Image (cartoon, rainbow, N blue to C red):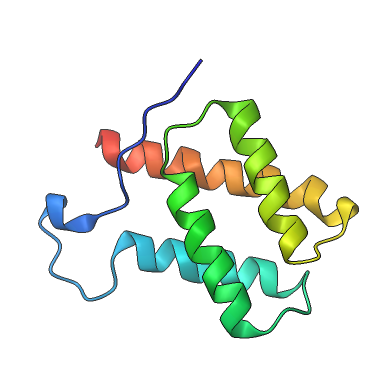
Length: 102
């Protein structure tokens, strides 16, 4: 099953805020992952921008888990931490989906 997600963009919903849903999602993920990696902030920021885009992408569950796993490997996140992080990131996709159904 492939879930179709819309790009994270508040402009379609009339937002004039300088802090869009994508920015907020990125900030949330950075805060979450900072605890689990020793990567420098610029590297973390780059990977998290990639993750934010992926979470809004059109991937089936298994493909998305595989891609997230690979991206977290780049950040040297431990396998144990990934067991909690990947479900949390997938939860963020559910929030994104719900926001776009409103």
